[in-house]
Image (tube, rainbow, N blue to C red; front, side, top):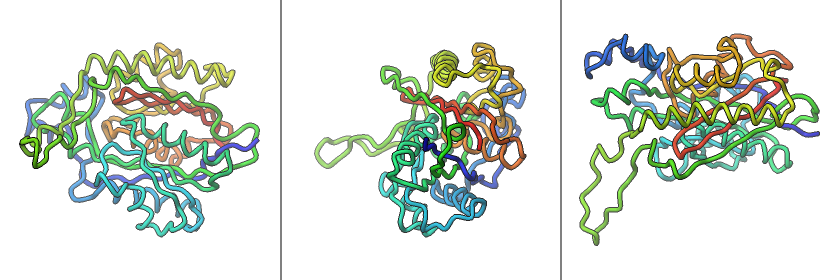
Length: 328
């Protein structure tokens, strides 16, 4: 059986660190308030980097670790809900930056669940034989959509990129094992950020205002959706794989809020010490959070051959995705 195998990971992290104490100076909040409610102590924010810049850094790290020739990369998929341009896509800019001239390039948008969607798409290309070397990236600059006067949202988000390289392998045991991805469109108004309004020479509408693009969120509804759906999705994927919860080595969740993760852990019956967390240092980096965490784990030597790793995310749309990976 041909499966997709992750052969390298990487990340692109902005240098600028913004602590909770920095936010105390610009908005009515406190380190205690933020920490207790979210688990976040600091986050990274770009100064002049673009989403393509961060994704390129992650891609170059992956290329270096894997030893692959960029010309052998035949597809680049970038998950982002914060691209630099409406067109061209981020993937095309990354292709140019790394010299992957033979790659087909596409962006995927599924908000904070985007990396699981992108990984799912890449997996289908690999196992079908259509593509043999797929670079899967997630790059987000949520700071440009953040209302820095709204303490309910500005404390949550950070900027980052991460990714993996997928190749096929004849393997009955390792690689990407099974998945569930899904969407609940009736909840689209619960979480998101605005885009360009319909404004042209004939409708008389005013030009875009900054507030039209800010992140909007119904925190209670997001909490209810996330804690219910992630528990259900993780259970479904483990059932597909005929795997007991005790066999799970790691859960790598979307790093949205420590309270959400704690509730999910309790509901699904997997100990918190199996949930890898870096939300304290990076905040919510949208679809980049899972690959950034995965890269940290790889660099720390936490991922061993045969480990069962559950990647699970949720986000605006509303969307969710869970993928079971056996490390090999």
